[in-house]
Image (cartoon, rainbow, N blue to C red; front, side):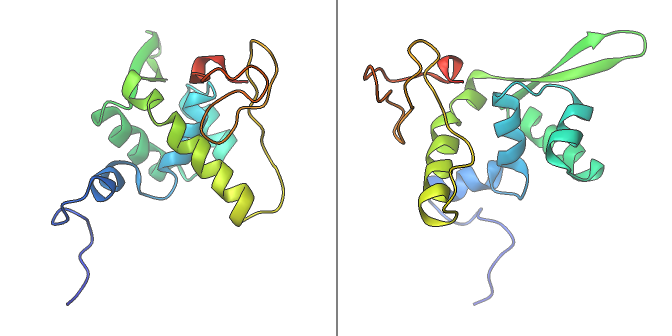
Length: 141
């Protein structure tokens, strides 16, 4: 049986989620957006992503309601991409994937997450190691 090019026939929430965020570069675009990158050229610089790929990913993420395209300048017209509530809900996925990568793929700890309020490390499941608070993405540095 040949494998299909998508997951449409699979009755699985992971497969359905991968239809939205499973392409190469997509989660990195979301990651950067969560970290505050908003403008097309800034995504290009931060990611080193090909223009056509970035345009396609931003279009898909906007259509799926993960990012919202907002006009910040009229003449010439310029837009930025802002993380929606649906996009911010991917934060635990990114945090867990980063933790898994540090533990199982790369021996280096390349990026750490800290609780803005107290400075404690954010643990793999989102709790602050220092104060025990479940840290929302808005309170992570």
